[in-house]
Amino acid sequence: MGIVIIAIIVLIILGLFFTFVPVGLWVTAFFSGVRVSLSTLIGMRLRRVNPRQIISPMIKATKAGLDLAIDELEAHLLAGGNVNKVVDALIAAQRANIDLPFEKAAAIDLAGRDVFEAVQFSVNPKVIETPIIAGVAIDGIEVRAKAKVTVRANIERLIGGAGESTIIARVGEGIVTTVGSSQTHTAVLENPDSISQTILRKGLDSGTAYEILSIDIADVDVGRNIGAKLQAEQAEADKRIAQAKAEERRAMAVAKEQENIAKTQEMRAKVVEAQSEVPHALAQAFREGHLGALDYYNLENVKADTDMRQSLAGNESAPGEPNE
Image 1 (cartoon, rainbow, N blue to C red):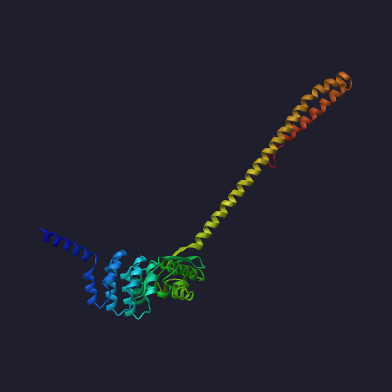
Image 2 (image 1 turned 30 degrees about the horizontal axis):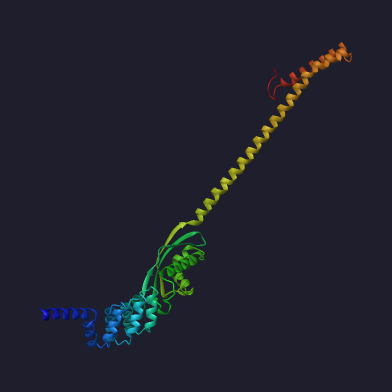
């Protein structure tokens, strides 16, 4: 029984040892040409680093002829980087004869960019297609264009450089500016290369992570007649303004007429009031002896004569009509 217990204890100890100490990984590294000690692997375990995430990329780098240090890879992994992608990028850059040191590749990876994809774009340029962008020429006709931008990743500006959205925005601005400065829309349709040339002269790739190789206008179409639409809207606006001013003048005329009617009615009321005082004034004159009977009859005759004249004037016929 004692021998069995000792054997079990030895097996447990060996199992824990081989579990904690990656002997198999050390053997693989040794025969792959990577010189790493068991103490280094144990130290990775103690630092909670998976040794396989360091040794496997190290084997690829050694086979590719790259001179990398295990401490550099481990430090990059502890910083949150992707060691495998960095090594793949370094190998691809070496094959493409691109100068990419490990520090640069690690910085690009930690900046959140895909360093391996960036190296691929440096070798094989990428085509960015813009959406349909509309511009209005001086003659008021809308021109709608779509461009294809061929870009290559700029390794030196990958850190802090603007991305694809900035390239698309700048190209769109160039299209709008070029179309807007054209006298007629037909000039743009006849020579769409003028858009590409204008955009390339502006140096739109400055401050971006890409280098623009070419800009090709994929499609150019005629859109709406913006000038005619704006003129129609302006005419409609002028019409509404004129109508509003005419309505204002009409309202003022109506108000003036109402004011004149009110004044006339007020004057008539005063006349009626004055006429109602005449009999009282005559009676008072009779009582006080200021008016005699002869004077009264003369006043009545004058009044009757005046009424007759007014009646005759109202009954006169219009020119060319017989008298009644």
